[in-house]
Image 1 (spheres, helix red, strand yellow):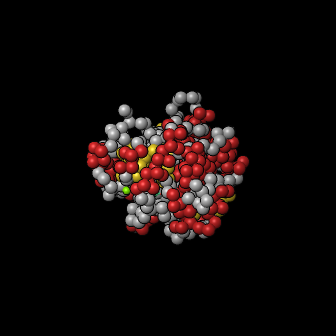
Image 2 (cartoon, protein in one colour; image 1 turned 90 degrees about the vertical axis):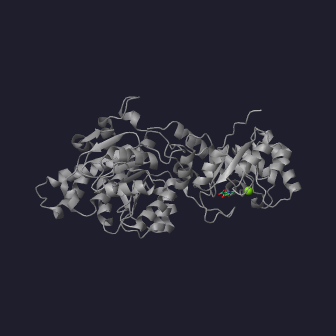
Image 3 (cartoon, helix red, strand yellow; image 1 turned 180 degrees about the vertical axis):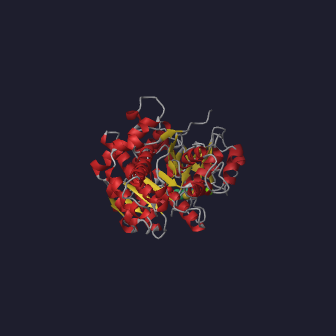
Length: 534
Ligand code: 3NM
Ligand code: MG
């Protein structure tokens, strides 16, 4: 008998003690399966053997009715007694080899893993799948000291690359953090989770059918978006099937300026105290509206109505606000631009960047060579060719491409030449003026412009009916958003610097705001120096 093929997409782990008052266990189980659960594990931590056996038998009947596999937690004897499809073993349960020798050869065996060594051992011992957790905090099981965060789930997944061993994440997974869990837990080789294991978000619900349906929709859409990544706006600006070309990108980015003026989106910016006013003025000049709110209490409401979010941690006084804003922006599928100002400078900044990136998925990360280098190292990416003098990268093209792949977002590396990558194409942008380096916060203003154009990229996509893809963290071609934002500021700086009334950095700043306001798609297109370099 061959091993059954298991669809791990939505893996229900039972928890009878979490059922809402009056909800029958078997009724709840059946409704969960009707809502989309693809595999069930019966987990009984307090039942006597007789009771466990009965629960397992009754659960099996329902799973058989819907043709989904049933896995027994821990107890080989129960699995054997009822003819279960598999067993799930904890690190302190029976070793895999012993379990295998007792069970029929077609039995699925899964193992809970919390460390790289657990994963290596599971592969070596021939596990069929691993349960990686705890991803998030949970009260369903004591996971103190064992919370991984999505980024470490990705690291454990990397160990599984090429092994054929399947993986689900577990621990505190809910419909509200599922998209982030899936997008954040990715190996360096694009290995994604096969599914997610859930207890309370389904079991504690009075309507488990709806709860599991909600989770199923997100997992399916994510798998679809991974299998067929879309480039929503690209097809409009270049002929079908053609690679990105510089002219199409510039046209696509420039036209977003019209979208900004048409929709006047609200650009939510949590930024530093040095630049707040000028960043807000730059936003207004482009035709959008700034909102510089920082209180954690208002983030849930705010991210429903904003066009995009900018998190700039030049002065980290609003960490709670940053954590929540990004979470809610992800939830509402709004672009999140992260500007990790000076992230390499202190241990606190590095820790904070990691904490933020564990909580939410950025759409675009923007930084200079030092900042991008630090982000790359902080996630143990080999930043190949980092110039030891810190002045830049020997191979900026590979650095931005690799980091974009790893972080699953657009990377903007600023400098005399700016590099932008979405993980496949790399662009070099050569606009700008040296006066930008003589005013404070021009980098922060660039972040603002990028956030504004990112909002426009999303709105443009919705305008043309590309709709919200529930599997994507955000709709719209964010490469164009990134290019548009960088071009707007750098082109405006050239025009401002050339003005007769600009005598130095003091007069340059107001002129820059003026010229941001005077920009048209035409001017951007005419002056853009953009090249596809990789
Ligand atoms: N195992 P909920 S966390 C059963 O980390 C279990 O290995 C975990 O429950 C691990 O979905 C966990 O309600 C409980 O958070 C998951
Ligand atoms: Mg156990």
